[in-house]
Amino acid sequence: MMRRLGEWTRAERLGGGGYAQVFRARHGNRPDEAALKVFDDPSYVNTYEREVASLMAMDGAAGTPRLLDHGRDGDGNLCIAMTLAPGRRLDRLIAGGTRLASDSLAALVRQMLAVLAVAHGRGLLHKDIKTSNLLADGERFTLIDWGVAEPVGDGSAESIRAKQDIVAPECYYGRHGVPTDFYALGWLVVHAATGELPYGFAANRERDYRVAAHCLERPELPAGLPAEWRALVGHWIAKAPAERLIGYDLDELLARAAAIPPAASPGLMDRRNMGRSSAYLRQAAEAGVPYAQYELALRALKDGGREEAMHWLERAAGLGYGRAAGRLAAVLLDGGDAAELPRARELLLTAGTRGNTDACYRLGMLLREAGEAEAAAGWLRRAADAGHRSAQYRYARLMDLKTESGRALAAKYFDAAAERGHPRARRRIEELSAVAAGGPS
Image 1 (cartoon, rainbow, N blue to C red):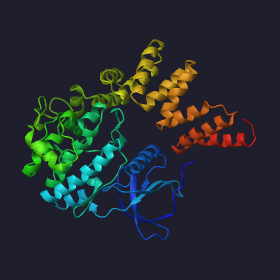
Image 2 (image 1 turned 90 degrees about the horizontal axis):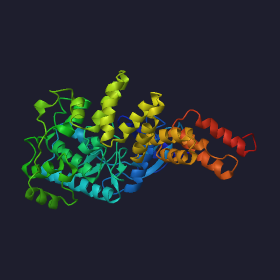
Image 3 (image 1 turned 45 degrees about the horizontal axis):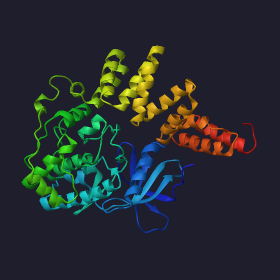
Image 4 (image 1 turned 45 degrees about the vertical axis):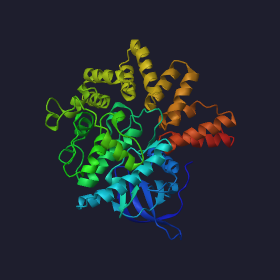
């Protein structure tokens, strides 16, 4: 069972986003107030666990909140209690007319570089650096909302939050790394200094445009960006991760940026050409962006366009995009053609090896049906340990309930599936309890 949250008393709401709300809170008679993050859905366990793990990894480093408590409250809500950082959200200050002068901008960037030095040194990427995730108290800044943070790992990453404005181009190709956070840092400087968003985002809020712009559009720095920042920001917002200057000493970075000419950007489009030849997402797909190809395929499937969907899934899978390979395998399996089974299995293996949890689950179930029990259990456990609730349930079902160790392992995974809202897992936990008490197995 998930740990129980301590007794926190909520006060006014401080803010919130697409998946959680944050409240001012107090614990018992302690004098210090805290920020209590309450998730909107009690089954958002994967996001909750990712944020808890990230806060633990940062361990209250300067410029970040410290984890105080976490667990389910008395109503079953997932909650995270953190130190309450002083100040106001930077995006709200900017909306009210605030612009950071060069000294304040330098203070902001130095503090963010210090935070990133700790995070990157511990193998963690924030992946959501923006003004709405920064609290400003004079020239003291705190980077909040670590719910999108991920380990660098092998550099593979295919999860993108739908409402993110600033996503580094490589993320749309299924990759991330240390340069990913520096891309966002470059656009943070632009917004904080000038009040302007990247590309044409202030006028065009269409999600598909954001994908195409980050991957294809030639970036333009606003005239209001101070001259001393233009070279460094230009390096940071380069499309290719290898062209971004990486380092954690601001003075050194500014000197390096001034001495190194920015890389040429052949093939990028001017804003007036964005979306002219075709719709934004199709434009990105035709330019070879696998995320766009995958999204087009999903829309085609929804509209009954199987042939078009197969075309885009094949292209994205050919570029090594795991989600596309997994979905292509699912389409082949749903077709019911036994001749497609070897190809589907190969695709699932490719996607699963790249860390796609749904592919791991599907491959495990496919191997189970083929009688390859040991291999099936391995893939199901891999998906289960990554937070896939159906895999957790199915893997638990494989346990030998006649042994104490088997019952304990089954209980662990049934409980994990139940926490994530699996409809039958809770009943299985009750049946296990009955077995342990001497009832029928």
